[in-house]
Length: 325
Image (cartoon, rainbow, N blue to C red; front, side, top):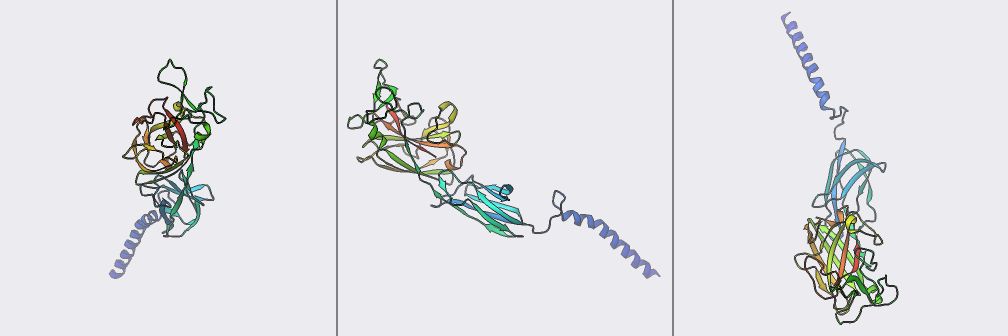
């Protein structure tokens, strides 16, 4: 009889323990929202966003989309261009990467199927896009500074002037745009200039590869970085007061000046560190991943002189080429 009582007492104790533990086990099988979460119901998606020459892109948005528009998971690439989403629910999705400025990607969306506990690696490799220049001609634009003798936008092959008056206010005439050999530059000569730019990023700096033809032979030029509040088309009318976020010399540890060859050609490669610009605003860590727009301004100096942190006297400094990106 005593043995039977002990066994019944033991059974009662086990039942009591099970009743106490069961709610805890139930809680462990639920996520924070209270919904039951099957084990290993998530997968991981990671990778790197880089250029075709190996430069990585920080600050790029990568999203996992369901049905083309519902964001299931997202991440922003770090300084090494890496992204990682460790809790992507099991399912079929589109993996979409934001395309940086100044780059090409044939397809920035890829289908992915996430299985339980699976680790998916998807790297995106952008081709650096070559951006073409436009010739600065419109005097109503804050950068366009070229007119004819009558103060109008030149149309025929006529001599060119800058609308800023000469240093002597009494002279009262526009400043002629002359070449180093002294001849008066004409519209056809001015419009012959061409330029291209390739812009990429790595390790918190921006790389620029620039090529020019048709410049004023032996002419002295400087490079300037204009930061816009948003990307703009080359045909846009811009205002310094409302459209610009920064302006400064585009350079690395050296100078922002160069001299065109006798054939009017030049090739420049430079790396710009992040930091304050020489006039106002700030050079970002990576110019092509910002929400801003940018213009590389190629200035011609009539007096064949440069002035460091600023373009110099208005009547001697003329914007020749503009590269929007």
